[in-house]
Image (tube, rainbow, N blue to C red; front, top):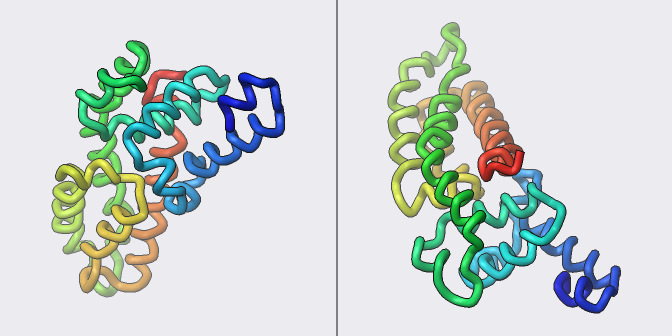
Length: 193
């Protein structure tokens, strides 16, 4: 719709297409988790969407699409009718080089705020939770979904039986904040700012 709206100068079609893309590549991490799997998960669709969003004046939207493309095999990125542009390839490969640090930031941020005065002694599980979270985040293909709700659910399961209710709520709140910060920085990660 977006392409047709641009090609035939039909603003309503263009806006409807943009609206669909923005809902699929939402800025809010909760909405990100509810996105349409058919549009956002098909490799050819991701690459085609990357070509379209490259022409728009919306760095965040284009960066979000490139994030999804970054989980494809390198051969998919460089061949076929929807291969990424040379500039976008540089952005995607640059993001992949930064990914270990991003995952480390999430892992380290998850366990940093357990109060030393916790009556349930949750602090004793900090290192274990950090270690298991690190393993979970850096294992392939799990790292490919580090912003998706499934990953958040998996990270929460490693705290079961280890954290009291208050510390678990703090952990979940930190996890949400960390995931949102990562989502908010897409344009930076893909060198648009």
